[in-house]
Image (cartoon, rainbow, N blue to C red; front, side, top):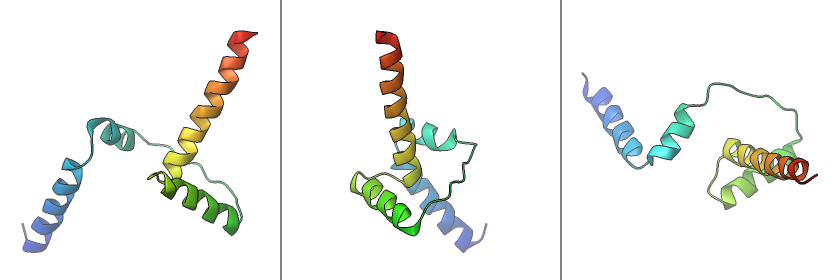
Length: 79
């Protein structure tokens, strides 16, 4: 293994050690992607809000979806 490869693997190992098991499972468990068309202003707003909470845009949108799902399923259960 070259010094460059070793340095890259060491950096990756250090990064992975800093990630909790739940977060690691969440990241590694993703296998699908979704493309959406949005304006640059919408994209910037999503990035800004996600960043404010320490999230990626994917995490932000996934959590937003889960919130809406909880709300709508909660409404269905209470009917």
